[in-house]
Amino acid sequence: MRNHPRWAALLALLVAAPLTAQDDPAALVVRLQGSVQIRHAGTTGPAAQGTRLVVGDEVLPADGARAILITRTGAQQVVTEATTIQEPRGGGNPDMFARAISTLSQAASADARTAGGRQGMIRPIPGEPVLVAPRNGLTVTTAHPTFAWLPVEGATAYTLQIRRVDGSRPARYEVTGTEWTLPEAEAALEAGATYAWTVAPKGGRPTREQRFTIIGSEVRETLDTTLGDIRAMGLDPMEDGLFLTAVIFRDLGLFYDAASALEGLEEAGEMSADLYLLKGEILNVLGHEEEARKAFDKADAMMR
Image (cartoon, rainbow, N blue to C red; front, side):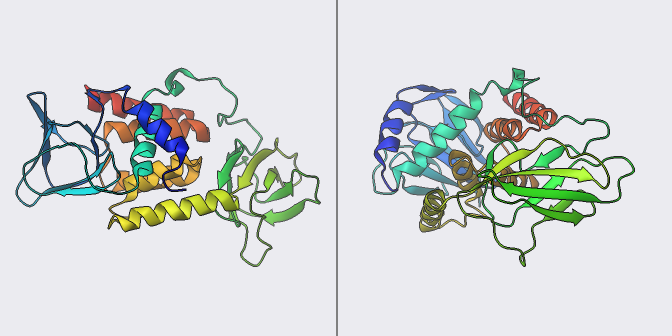
């Protein structure tokens, strides 16, 4: 999946289009340690993960600080002292840069802020166990998923049903609580297959089904290859490369995993306006309308 023509064409389109305050980005900030400033067109301000940099911008780390950049050519650049961005040279995986720019641009232009009332949003219904996850036909990366739903008042147990949408016989499980993971002792769900699931309080009626898909082999291969590319840059996908990991999950339509990666960044205090925009877009797709709006509000506040 390296240097795929789709991404080469997308990169050519993206670098010619306006992107916030910077046009034709030459590099992208993907990790910060300590205080780092950016000087752009004579104005200096704090760097943030997701900051686009153009040729001529200056990256100004404080003593002991550093910024990790990915350039338009896909190479990693570690900045530990005052540096002026030059026209990128050196090899790497330009797909990574294209995916990151594309994902951030989509999030910035998402109309999810005003998309209330749509199908797919999680809306509590009195007396019904509203399904929270997985839902909306989204893809999950485990063959033993975790299911979650809103409780029914007074219910002490539930019947959870899972079936393949191709008409195979459904499996039913008696569970307590409002979150349950398919046990490892049970047969794994099939890669690439789409399933429907529902929950009913003991003795009550089931709620309307929600569908989800288990990650297929092609997407899994692309994911593994791309996470390997992050490691090849000297970054740990679950640590200092978490920004890029979140971007890749989102790009591949793995919204639950992207949301989890962003939670890790938020817990580490590494969220920027760009990342809150991305979080808002992802939460909206997951059906969490109110939480999405809060993320968009945080992004707006940081951009003021």
